[in-house]
Amino acid sequence: MIEFRNVSKHYSADVTALRDISLTVAKGELVFLAGPSGAGKSTLMKMIAAMERPSAGQVIVNGQDISRIKPVAVPFLRRNLGLIFQQQRLLTDRSVLANVMLPLLVTGASRHQAEQRARAALDKVGLAERAEAQPLALSGGEQQRVSIARAIVNRPQVILADEPTANLDRASANKVLDTLKAFNAAGVTCLISSHDEQMLDAAARVIHLHQGQLEGAA
Ligand SMILES: Nc1ncnc2c1ncn2[C@@H]1O[C@H](COP(=O)(O)OP(=O)(O)OP(=O)(O)O)[C@@H](O)[C@H]1O
Image 1: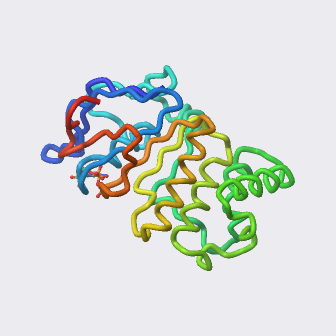
Image 2: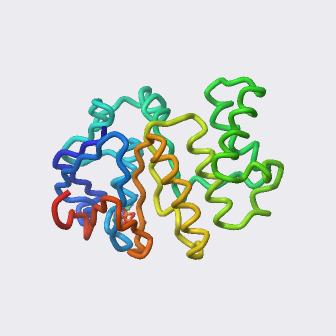
């Protein structure tokens, strides 16, 4: 489903974020991407969503080589991906429900349909009761679960979650991870990054990145 073939990324002559990465993530897998700050986790995730291009090598998503994807094809690629990135914060000037409806409205759903599906997504992350709340009235963990609802509302095949538990206390972090795992159990491929070794699930596959390189076999 996701394959990296000898992928390197140089942001500049002296900044190499990834070096010769080869790995495969199968459909339905739950994979943790671990490594200290600066190891290249975000860069690796961004490449799957064509937010960054490899300097060398190929990135294959769903059989398509996206290393040189045309800009016009990027929205089609992203339609199959649920993205939970730190840069994509919730909009604080509208309700939780409106935030989750947004991806549906931009892809042409009617308001009625968008609202129904957004409410169902909020129900899945355990926040049906908070639909009318403003995002800032929610705890950090709840806000992160709203981000998950927004990411899955288009029913993506893959969830990419970059540090979804950063800045959360252990109990909230576990709840966020449990929510992601529930989607994985329902068949969604999940790639979750964390610099916090304690957040890694002993039962799941863990890929360790260090200074842009894989540690051990992937
Ligand atoms: N847009 C960019 N331009 C230049 N350098 C970048 C850019 N993005 C990342 N880098 C550099 O690439 C390296 C890897 O960064 P990346 O964000 O992928 O690591 P990370 O493991 O996700 O770290 P963090 O957990 O701190 O986000 C770092 O040295 C970083 O400074």
